[in-house]
Length: 170
Image (tube, rainbow, N blue to C red; front, side):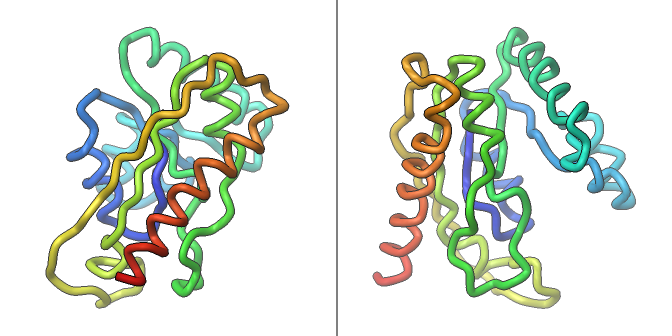
């Protein structure tokens, strides 16, 4: 389970560049409506309607099929990009961690340090420069139970948050 902070349109491209293993994104269904992007998005993602319980549970079956094909799963656990760009790292949703525990797959936290500075979601923002990323140590989930998902979620969020703070202060 690949998880990273989500602050830029560059995040998807950087994830594709960094990951050594082929993977599939789990993403929100409403992105299918974006012209051209939506056409490709629905072919390479496991889509979820976050308002629909049936859709959320269906993600587990589709993810298991992809895992059986040898693919990893990628989720941006913030569940979207916060409107307030002063937020360093928004709260994480449970889905990625619940799924990792259910499928007994490791969680790989990644921190995308510069993407917000390079190309945020604010129109005409950013500028050229280096984009750095940190791939942190894996969290094995074999001994976790579903009731431990909040603990796992907060540990992973803490690692990403501290890396972002460290980079900001240097």
